[in-house]
Image (cartoon, rainbow over all chains, first blue to last red; front, side, top):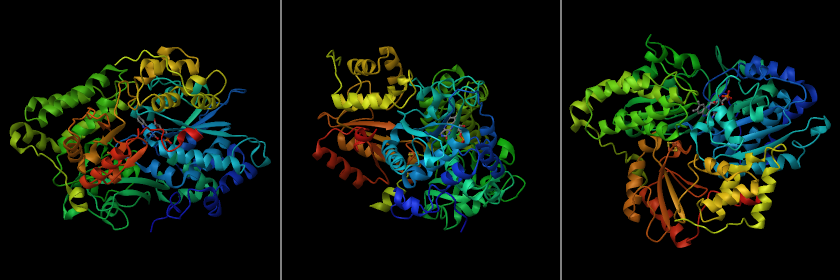
Length: 445
Length: 181
Ligand SMILES: Cc1cc2nc3c(=O)[nH]c(=O)nc-3n(C[C@H](O)[C@H](O)[C@H](O)COP(=O)(O)O)c2cc1C
Ligand code: FES
């Protein structure tokens, strides 16, 4: 069994309530931080831990925190990114629903380290019932003196609020999130200035993912060095992986960074192998935005080494033969899957979610969706495949926010690794699979 | 369907708007626009008519355009009337891999409507949506605040029949969200 730091207690009945959470040692990090540590010392511990942002980009959290501007007399904010809309990702929902107090505890401890007296948890609108769970936890935290004025008599005051969104993937991008939190359309801002200097209402702000903030709790409790003992190289600690698709045991797993991908897919402890005894065709390892890899390349790098669940190993070979850990949204596809059709669902997604500010993204995503639709309708040509390639390469790097890249990369990777399938579809439309996946439907009948 | 009535929030909702506005620093109450739009949508028949959005603007003391431009950006806000229950079926990758298209086809056949349409009795609107963060329990659909997961045809039948015999409007703010927000 791998070591668990976040989901240690997820199966204990009542762990969503304050009493049970507290009995299991909950809120110890707040007590330790406020009574025995200074904000600077906490930031040092987070740096030592090697924790990297769990929202997708993997930016070192301690470094991000140390960039926070501290002009005197100006409030600072911590904003938790609970927008979780990257297809294939559902770990934050699991954590918030099961152990809401872990996030609240992390918010208080992190806010103390950042000198923030107010924090907001921005949660996607569809997660209304999870927002309810968080609000209940916040009420309990207030009632027990962990939130409010002069917490534990230390003079530190903190207020934490839940803010619901209303259905927009782009509001997961941190500056779009801040716009939305200010009551506007979710249009990403031009950076710089970065949120650390001018964020929410123009004040210095740190935006962190749910899982990142939760990980601060064990780091403060056990020390950054202890956290860094788990994992390999610059991939330290544990990571929540959302596993879905054609596997026997879909769900959220906390893994120690560094386990082999093969173990994750095939061992009983995790995904339990491919359903119905089928072979694996491809994997999207880190949410819809990261390059898809065929089975051989997800299990082994181009050099023939076993691929590991780390930022570096998944990235080995660059985009030619590698991918990214991303948000940890791990989607597995079996041998019967149409890669073109799967790509179409992604293309449709990005077209729907583009905010429309930048022409390459607004127009390009729609164009790519239409071409894929044409191919799947049996009217594609080889030139269409080349056109797809051309369009994606003209979006990347030409937009205000990385949604452009997120839309382009999956298209590039599908063509790079599965060009033969595209060509078969355009040359012989009869080969187009009318993919129907009745698996689950059949089993439950 | 243009509704020219002047719409008013209930006193209970207005009190809630005030409470939400208090979460932000002075002068930043515009931040309340999304939560308050959710309240308006629940209170005014599941959609946001121009008078409903104007009521939001009045409650927050901001210009109506500041409300319209936000309401039109986010996909959870309905700018046209909808049935009492909006069935939102996820169709993105993981759900598609697990049979979402078959679920949609089944619902279309059962209710005699296509994606985007409302049933003749005004009970159901069918909508296909993008990933709802329930990929490990695919296929799935959302109705009001409830997630229905690991769907089968039989399960869909039971769920929809129950909503129909219940006959009540379902909104995102169900689950007594209103009492705590
Ligand atoms: C289009 C887009 C969508 C994003 N969606 C999310 C999201 O849903 N959740 C999240 O935590 N980060 C998301 N991010 C990343 C955030 O911009 C940001 O990097 C992150 O919240 C920082 O937190 P971290 O350092 O703790 O990961 C998204 C980025 C982009 C470009
Ligand atoms: S793909 Fe359907 S919930 Fe994520």
